[in-house]
Length: 214
Image (cartoon, rainbow, N blue to C red; front, side):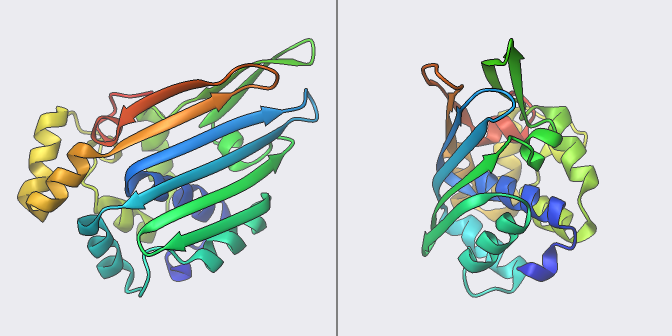
């Protein structure tokens, strides 16, 4: 998998988003502790890649496993994350890591943002909107773009498409199994700013890849 990513920044960001995109059902927890300028973001993720998309990823990368846990952990550590733990059981993945100071690419890329007032954290916001995802795709090298192209996502190609048409397109190209997986895929995000209660939102993966979610 390492040969697919040259730049460490893009590798880690691409890795994080590809893991999200390839999961039939994924749960992400983003929790901030501490106050400015000593915040720490704790990230946990658990998900499972569907059979059809697992086959596609293996064929594209030439790998023997959907998730290379050692490589994932090594690159996330090189990208500045600490307490990284990555475990995989076939097509399932569990990931935990910390971003001390909230200075990682998750913030510098604008995917996450913190609002502070008087040193106290007021909000932690997620920006997985169409423009952010399109900018990310454009910044990737051709090899990671090739991997993301497997999902045929309108948001990466500056296209407008309804969720229904997108799901049908996936089915026409990859078959009923992939269509069923992409249609059923959901991502649940739990967001907890420091000292506050958690808020949750569940978004459809197809809707996200069509640019209809933020």
